[in-house]
Length: 390
RNA sequence: GGAGGGAUGCCGGAGCGGCCAAUCGGAGCAGACUGUAAAUCUGCCGCCCUAAGGGCUACGCAAGUUCGAAUCUUGCUCCCUCCA
Image 1 (cartoon, chains in turn yellow, brown):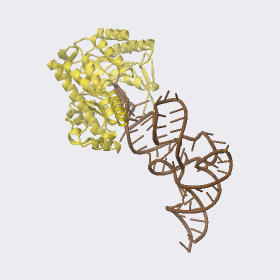
Image 2 (cartoon, rainbow, N blue to C red; image 1 turned 135 degrees about the vertical axis):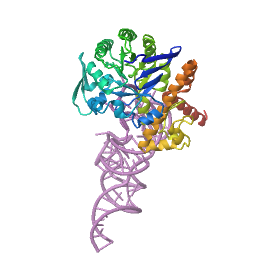
Image 3 (cartoon, protein in one colour; image 1 turned 90 degrees about the vertical axis):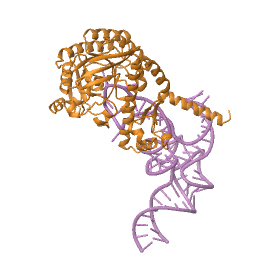
Image 4 (cartoon, rainbow, N blue to C red; image 1 turned 60 degrees about the horizontal axis):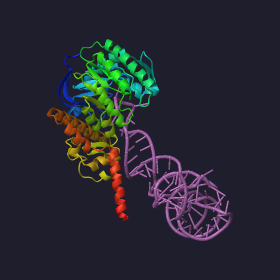
């Protein structure tokens, strides 16, 4: 692994600004990685992704193993060349698929037996294979194979998954030969603070170049997530990058950075975009709503993305209703640009020592959809009362 | 001129005596989505009442039959197909 994989440049309370050194360049942190499971950020070209301000993205070992196959990509010169992306790449091990595809998966200490969601064929993934595959893909950062618990799992079950994750982490470490890749461990422990602590302490002793927090944002209430993030992050070595896996709603990025997280990835911004939900500084907005059908302004007049600089909300509304493919792309561009700008603003605020103010301002201005809907409904209700003369 | 068939909620289209405010699509109105099996999924969708629930008006129009009609009978209006 590279020397000085991570440089911590500045802190502002718990928030940290730094940079990741990878074979494909330096990447500033706090960092958000768009998700490109199948070697593509859906609807975008690599050039688009770069243009939106991203230097690193995430791809998925399980998906690429099933299709087109690890060997195919290796023979074609590795993942960077295959997908024509010259920035950094982090590959997930397939551990998350053990969780999300659990009906198709059986786990033993040896590894995970999968049934392909594509053709039903059976496959076996071990910690050693996960490392080997990721080395073949040639990602800059690779992840240990872990077992992610579901929200609501019993403590006993979570503990067993965590202990297995620890054993698998050691096996991954032993199997990892490549010098060009940083292998990150993944802290598990579900919603149990004592297990989280045990996991962080255990893995920290193994001295990985980076540490991820996994198994959160799996359906638990938000009030549960952030205290666990805060507690776990505090137990991780300060000189190593901390990666909160699968978190990426704007409000969660700010909250995560405030608790000492350096790296995020999430399918949410891109997936939600494809379903018509767009981020603005005021909160999330559903572009399909009737209110936008005649709006001649961009969805966010302050946004510098090509979608907002070019098209009206009414046009986007029309594209979504007409199920035109351009809608997916324009919305993805907007949401990723929003996230990219947010991360840049966060980093600048940390470097300026004003992150606390920034976070407070952002969170007070950014209403979640639920809050927004609640406010609107209350306004309608009040208006109705006024009209009926009450 | 003759012979058939049909008129159902915003639209298409089921239902063919009570379990029908009416299956199912679509449109419309909202919501969800967090290491992507996702261009996916969920709810609402005659009117009124705060919810459980209740009330009202409804299946072209009118008059009947019946305890009870979107469903049966008769007349009327309009539409479609075929033969002249």
